[in-house]
Length: 311
Image 1 (tube, helix red, strand yellow):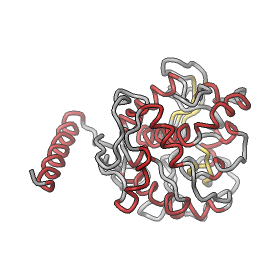
Image 2 (spheres, rainbow, N blue to C red):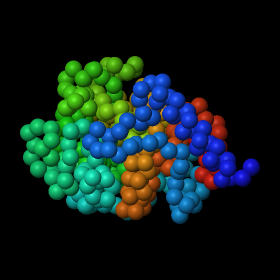
Image 3 (tube, one colour):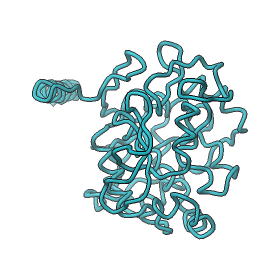
Image 4 (tube, one colour):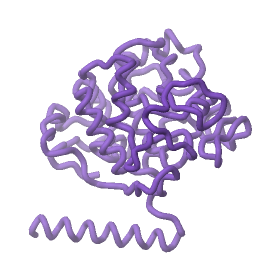
């Protein structure tokens, strides 16, 4: 069958299924960002043609070997200075309306200049958030400290309320941001009962793929982080101290669930491409939606093929 016809049939079927689901549930495939009118539509497309060879050394690998192969590919990058991130955010995290894309608050509309000021409440300013807390790897230690794949601009007040708590699911009895966008409280996800920070549903997949990137890119450092900083809040609740799987059982199951429920969006693809232009490395979990299944999940016995990837 002609490739163009095949693609048309697949896309048509996908659109039909999504429309049917929306009609039945009353919800869109992925909600519209509460801060703008940008539609976050799940995509099955992967990497730009000009970087097709980027992942070729991972071809044929599976499971733990695939994770290690990906680590070797994505670890090398151009190292940024901490102050560079302010200007970098203008390329990676500006919405179509010119405002900063805030993943922690649903009420902000920051101009890029509204950065790093003192704050007393949600909506005062945005700052640089290490979604994978920097205390977990020793503070301002490079190259993790300025790695844009996990550093996002977020509301300063909400960021402060999150602290270094691990991601999780909660009723938010300790804190809820405006409109209940983000929450802090006792974990309700099986496997952990401590305090966790829960991001909004529309960004849970973004953060899941961020964490998959971190434990893959820096897999050789995980044991050191676990050993040296394990007493820090969130470390041993998130990391298992091993190269593979890298994440604790409950955390991995939850993040896999988040990634499946909140598929890769156009926003993530555009950000991944922008980060690649800046620091010259990529997040493969965005380039290959569902890659986590080949590394940790139900497809880990299937060899990876970047040229013929099928989610």
